[in-house]
Image (cartoon, rainbow, N blue to C red):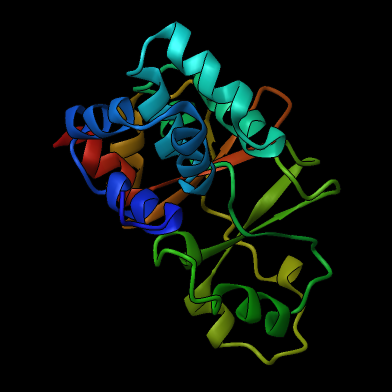
Length: 206
């Protein structure tokens, strides 16, 4: 009761699922919806999936429309697939964005390290589902080039994105094979829909 919504959201994201459900069950619907608004969409989707259809739908109706839309989008995928594991809020830029602009985006203090490890380059629009996915640029590569260099010229040509229906085993195998902390996820039209980060994969494996 004493924690502000943003702090409670942070705490819930680190707790076991049964304890998350227990705490949300003790909150009124309005407060619970406000807390879910503050959570990462993938964590909110996982929690709502464990609440039961009736309560889950009631909370989705009370959430901010944009946040609820992201959560509904994730709930459409199986929990043990790339689509169910991913976050819908990766860093997305155009091919004409510069190294300086990319580095400015990953410096934001609220970004988790795994999410800040790569910048995704797509055609417009730049909100998932985006235009056609072009590739990713790793932050270490950005550090090796001058600030005015175009990110479209620095794409990792050897990295294939995951399909949204890829299994948890496939996701883990790809992360291990390429020694990465995140992987882009695309739909059937090769549009970027999110990224899977190593922390979410480890949570599910554990």
